[in-house]
Length: 300
Length: 259
Image 1 (cartoon, one colour):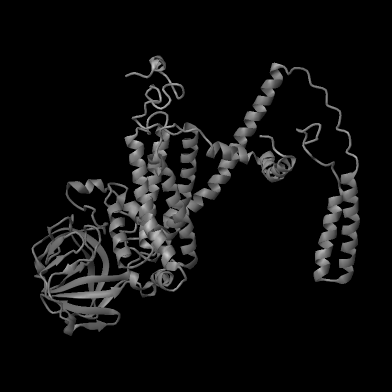
Image 2 (cartoon, chains in turn yellow, green):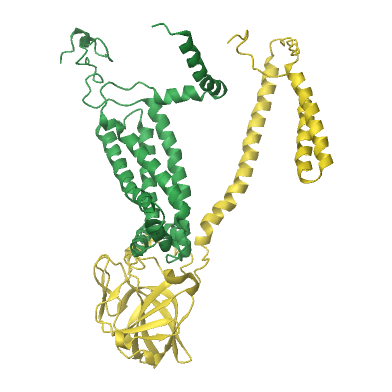
């Protein structure tokens, strides 16, 4: 290192020629695509300005400007003024930066979180299970269907449907259990033989009669009786159910709701209906105070 | 030993680019500060568990990027694309295996590293903050495991994630909202898969990398702890040097390091 002042930055003198050089290069590139004359002009411009630029660089550096005389010691007032100005500028930068940041972050955060909570895409569709005659009185039928056929197998749902005949007031009565365990959401299985011979398809729905008076969950051993009441294991409430209606003689499943306990059975069963809750969430008793707010989306 | 002129010339030529970078960035100095630092003389293999965990994470990051070349995060294609990686793509079985088993290695090493830190008392003043960062890293690592488990999109993945999300839902007050956010509805749907994929390969790794940076900065700044049985750290002489070197706090140690 033979530099006399090693700490001096190796900065060349200011020069305007690079601008001309850049224009020349731009002319070359445009000319290559568009026309030969422009190309020639570009080449000439680039060469001329390149020579000028190199000559500028290799020429003698201008002497550094004479050091400006050091100002006299600043007064208290001067210092105060600069501090105020500096403080104002920092605060303004933080403030404006914060506003811009919030303007960018909040919508993105909202998009990231809100769709899950305003019920996007969880509008429940009605499922037509076909004529009531498909459901023999007093026995369960396993109904399997795709909630949203466009989305495929991921929306496959299973219901256990039992025809209870008629209530005392003459209304048709069905027990319509949702197959997901109310412990942690595994698929509950009916404890009994499935009559595969009597399997039939009604539209997109598959119906299979089963001889079952209870249901069991393979994951953690939850057991339910024929009304969906928990009889053993970790579930915290009775199985969820579908609302149902009879339209043109067809049984139609509506939206899901949660159930505390079921009293009685069959057409005489009495139960309290709650908003659809997640598995493992208590809907009645003392523990329901742990879950005070119904999940948005569970109410539609 | 005097160096020949030729050798000096060669060294200068080799060092020129290093000096060039150093003069413009100071990075060479920082690298030396990071790599060539003093550690207690009585550390052992136990103190390498952190570096092992870091290596496991780097393996996960690299294999994950390559797997993302071939993985398709939508319900119709996810399972088939994983089968394609395993069966068809050259060496895909190896990279998927590295990622799958490496995930367990990463988690296990984190626990070993944490156990070493706990048993050696290396979480005490002034290293409490680094313990907290480490705990956050453990949480993020677990979240990586949870979100990654869904991606093969087979029955195990599906039902394990149903159960996992519903375990979140049972948390008092916030649980149902957490579950709702994770699966984007009342059941696992098509959005769940792409959401888990984005969390698994963008948000969580980003957080882990940032926290690893902080973690390492604090390790370098605060230094490595001696093991609890270290005689030097306890103020006694280093046995093999008989008090001539090492950190000596107890004046009696200079008389031969008696107990």
